[in-house]
Structure formats: C-alpha cells, structure tokens
Length: 235
Image (cartoon, rainbow, N blue to C red; front, side, top):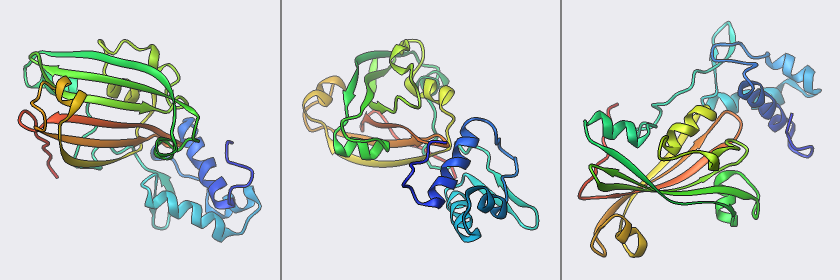
C-alpha cells in the first residue's frame, strides 16, 4: 500500500481501494469491503471509512446498490463530450490516409505547474512527446503530451509511427476518468509553422487529463487548425 504515512486516515483507505482496483484484485462489479470492515482493517471509526467510500462514489469509481452494498463501477470511456479515441482510428474511419511525425521525445524535469497537473512533485521527471498527426498529408493535430512514468514505464520506447500515444496509454493504463477543456487562440511561432497556418490563424486547443484508478496518467494539449477541424459529440 503506497499511502503516505502522514496522510489522513480516509485518504489511506481511498488509496488502498484504488490500489486493489488497479491491481485487478477488485474488478468491475465486485463488492468492496463494507464501511465497518474497512474501519476495523484500518483501526478507525466508521465515519472515516464512510468519507473514503463516499469520495470514491462521487468520483465514479464505486457505486452503491441499496440494500446490497458498494461495488466497483465499470470503466467509463464516454463520460465527457469528447470521446477518448485515438486520432488514427478517426482518420481511417473517414476512409482517409493517416500519417504521424514524431517531433520530439525526451524525459523532462517538471516545473511546479506541470507537477501539480500530473500529481507528481516538482523536479520529478516525466516523459514528454510532441507529435504531428496528418490526414491525407495535411496537418490536423499537433500533440504535446506529458506522461507519468509510473503509469507507463516503457512509454518512450514505443514506435509511435505504428501506434498512437493515446492508443498505447489506453492499453497499459486502464482509463477510469478524464477531464478536458477547449479553448480558441491565435496560432503563432512554431504552432503556426507546424500546422502550416498563417500567423494568427485560429486554432482549437483541447487540454485533456486522464486518470487510471490509482494515479494521473497523462496531460495533453492538442492543437487543431480551426478551419480544418471541428469537435463533435452526441449525448
């Protein structure tokens, strides 16, 4: 169990349950220990165990069944309007040719802002990749991505001409939830040149952070030419 020694007791219980799920000891549909059982296991009062369980219910990790107990929820890939789907599949589904160019790949020291986004400590190292995705030879997405090494230790060893970072990460780090934001901005400098845009042409930027059951997996910024790309969704 990796919970910090000085962490609040309810956080230790949350970490324990997330690690059990991440290790496959508790699977989707399995009943988790009752609050009384968790309280005895950790030597705390039942209300402390209740806080941990309620937090995980609110986060979508667990769900309650009245009169039966609390169970592990199935993974939810469609919890946001933007489906977590690799761009290669989207392009090929349209019957078009897909190609990717790896522009950069390295291990980087995190600044405080990046560390907070990834749930890591400042100056810890993460993996960074920068890729250009093309449809019929035309750039449609510039991807800048940070990856938590604890979630994908072999990330930098992958051939990203054969598999997209999104596809690889979905395979090695089971997705539990995602957060995203979309903004519009003017393309400048390297972004404009890479996407073959005139300076200050508009781009749509998707910021996305994904989580496995026990940790933050990746934070990505995806830049799209506004004149060649649109976001769609059904709910």
